[in-house]
Image (cartoon, rainbow, N blue to C red):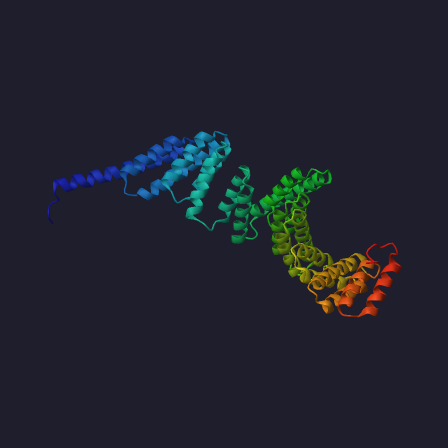
Amino acid sequence: MAEQAPDSAAAILVAAMKGTLVEFYVQRAEAFLQLCDFQSAVLNLRKAHSLSSLKEEYLDRMAFILCLQGQCLFDQQVYWDALESFTQASELQPNNVVYHRKCIACLAALNKFSDCLHLVNRDLDRDPKNPDLYTLRARLYDHFNKVPLCYQDIQKAMVLEPQHEGAQALMQKLLKRAQKAKAEAVNKALMGDLGEAILKINFALENSPLEAEYFIFRGTLYRRLKDFNAAIDDYIRAVELVEVGGPASVEVQHQLLLTYNDFAVHCYTRGCFEEALLLLNKALKADKNEKGLYVNRGDCLFQLGELSYALADYQQALELSPWDMSLQRRVSMLLDKLGMQELRRRRYQQAESYFSNAIDCDPRLPRYFLHRAKSRMGLQEVMGAKEDVAMALLLDPADEEVPP
């Protein structure tokens, strides 16, 4: 057998001594751990780590001891020192989510919520399907009064885990807060403070943005404030949220039509007849059985000089309410106006027809008979003209227009 070289023997001896030394450091680290001297335990493990090839094993043990130290400090409410320990553990094991959560808890205890949010965002970038992280971020958003973002994160957490207790509890908190704000908005509205009521219902919608009832209520407030565009937007959103064909759907559709009509009347009173006409067209597209919409559109068409279309709307309204005397007067007045246009053009036959229809709608006005008499004179129907003049005299003997 060949004789071993002196250098090789020395290397073996050094390795053996180093191995024994590493074991001593490890054992001493465990002894310090038993004494709860975490810093000394970590220092001995660092020495063992520098001397040994079992790098990962000692790193894991150091991270565990640092986490244990941090937890003890956290329980004693020494949050800054606890944060330092958890941060060191996290640096040793960057992929260990437990250490990240511990750091976040320390920052929260120190009211460093912006730093908490930064860490949670970083973790969500790494793990975008973690409902716990979304729930934690939702709580942070709630702290910052960013309620819409809070609600969105709760929704994401519940999509990932529908029965997530933390997300459900936070959702219930938002819903209760929304209900309270809605009740306060109602009280403000009853007191006539519509501006404050809007603020309250806005807060309710931030906490519960899928509640159709809140949109309907806010739409009603906007309508009372004559902010018709905002009211229409809210009613349309409510239509999207309610069940199609259900009682709520019928109610919100009715409110939407009323808003279109009120907006149209608002435009009409300011002389914006074309804008009013567009709004009434939208309303009638949704409901063709509302008499008032036809009447208002007829008024707009009348102001725009579209007399034939106006007459068609008045007649449609009259079909829906045949005994409405105000409608009958409207129709008769418009028929008389159309008849006068034809009379000036010497279209006596058409004029006579319009005047006759006007008389059928409202036979109490003598001027309709006089106008028909003029058209009959143009048609050489002298006897008919005389009868109309006689009827006009019977209705109003003092009418100065009759003798000529």
